[in-house]
Length: 557
Image (cartoon, rainbow, N blue to C red; front, side):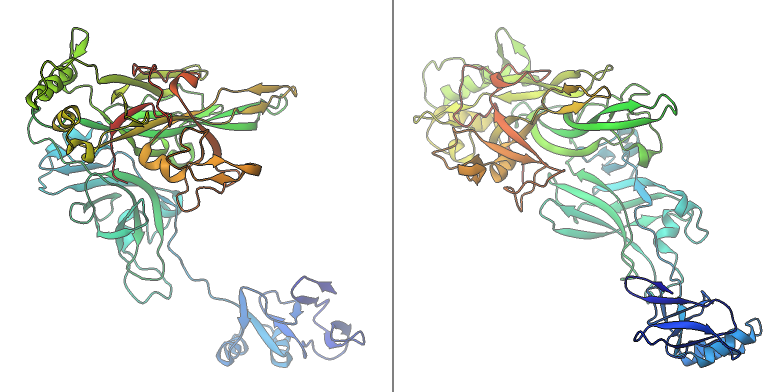
C-alpha cells in the first residue's frame, strides 16, 4: 500500500485481485481472489490502470455517465478493465487538456520608433528612427515596432508569429475571438488599452499613441491578448515617453532653454569561480551598479566575452551573450531626470561665462536693476555612461547642463519654480523668462559597499554604487533613521540630518526594505563621494542644507 500526503493510492498487484475493507479502519488493500478486480469502495484511476484512490487527484475528475459509457463501448479497452470500471465506486478520468496562449514568449524589440509628421516623437528612440520616420506619413504620434518570438510560438502551427498569437483562436473555452491591445501603463498604475495593428505572417505592429497617452510622461508598454477576455497572455515590457518633434531645424533663442532627458540603467557585476575539471563557471556574488544615458547618446556595448563577469543587457531574451548597441539596457528608466541640452547655442562659452549668463544679466537690467553683476549660473554635469573595457572603471561623459542651487535668507537651498518666477525678485523673474520651466534638485546617493567572497576564501570589497535621483522622486521615499533604526519622515527642520532611502523605489511602501531586492542608499554631497566619473563644475563651496547637488528642469511625476 502506498500512502501519499493528500490521497491514498492502492496499487493493483494483478488484474485478478479484489478491493476489500481492511480491519485497520477505512484503508483499503488488494487481496488475491478468483473474482474479477474491483475498487468497490474507492475510485479507479483509469489512466493509471493499476490503482485505486480515496478521491480523484488533481488533474482528474470523476467520470460522468456518458464518459463511463464511452469507456465501456470502446472495443480497445479490455474486459478486465471494463469490469473494474463497472464495479468501482467511481472512475477518475484525466481532465481535458485546454490549449492556452503562451505568456512571456514574445519580446518587444527595443528598436521601435514613434513618428509624427515624418519626425521622431519619443525620447527613447533608436538611431535608425530618423530615417524610418521620414518615410511614415502620420500626423499623430504613432509607434512602429516589431517583436521577437521564442520557439514556443514559432513552433506552434496555430501561432507562428505575433499576428497569429494575437488573432488565431485556440481550442479552449474562450467564447470571444482573439485580439490584442497595446496596454500603456503610467507610473501611477493607470492604464489605457490601445488598438494595435499587426500584419499577416509578420512580427511587426503599429499603434496610435497620441490621444491615448500623454506627452512628456513615461509609460510601460505591453502587448496583451484582450479579445477573448479569459486568456490575457502578455509579451515583455518596454518603456516610452512621447516628445513633440522639433517644428524646424533651428532653435528660437527667445524660447525656453532646450531640455533633454537622462535615462538610468543597471549593469550587474559578478564574481565567478571556474571548476578546473569541467571548466564551468559558478557565481559567488553579484553587485548592481547604475549608469546614465542622455537621450541623444548612443549605447556603448561591452567588449565581447565580458558577460560572465559583467552584463548590462538581457542575454537570455536576446539569446546573445555578447552585448550590442541595439539591445535594451537592464532596468532602463528613460526619464530618471532632465538636464539642459549642451547643444543649445546659449550654452556657448564667451570668455569666463556662457552666453546665457549675459542674457540673464540683460533681463535683470530690464526689470529695473542698474548694472547687475554678471554671474555664472550653469555648468556641465558629468557621469558614468557605461563600464569601461576592463570592467574595473567607467566611461565618463558630459550628460548635460545643470544650474547652481540658490540660498534663501534663512540659509536654505532651493531651486526656483513658478512661485519665484512670478514673484518680485528681478533675478528670479529673469531666470523664469530664460529657463521657462520650474526646476528641482538633483541628488547623489551612495549604496552600501559590496563585499564578495573569492574562490580562495578571501574577501574582495567593491566600490560603492552611486545613483542620481531627482527631488520629485527622492522626497517621496527618503527618511532619517531614528531610535532603533526606525525610519522617520524628514521635515523642513530636519532635512540637514543624515538621509537615506531604499532603491529601487517603492512609493507605496517606502520605509519597508524588500530584502534581496532593495538596498539602503545614503544621500551625499558631491565632495563626500568617491567621484569616479561622477564630477561636476557646480561650485562645491555651496553647502545646500539638504545636500542637493544642482538644479535641473523639473520632470512630471
